[in-house]
Length: 87
Image (cartoon, rainbow, N blue to C red; front, side):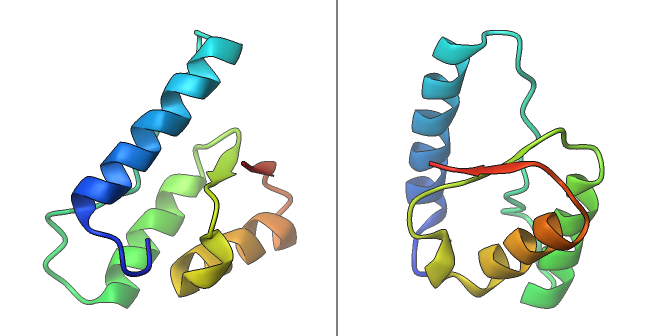
C-alpha cells in the first residue's frame, strides 16, 4: 500500500479478487483496508493484523516487499504458520 491511494489499492484488490474467484468462486474476502482509520499507522496495522486471525490465507500483491506494513504482515504469516501466497 506504500505510496498508493485508496482508489489504487481498491482497484488492485478487485483485480486480485476477480482472478481468485475464477479459480474458486466460493471464497470470502476479509478487507483489511481501513479507510476510516483516523488513528496512526501502528493502530491501523494492529487492526489489520487482528483480521488475519480469521483468514485461511493471506494474499500479497506485487510490490508488497516495498511496504513496511506488508512486510510485517508477511513475517507474521511466516512466524505463525498462516498460509499465504504472493501473486
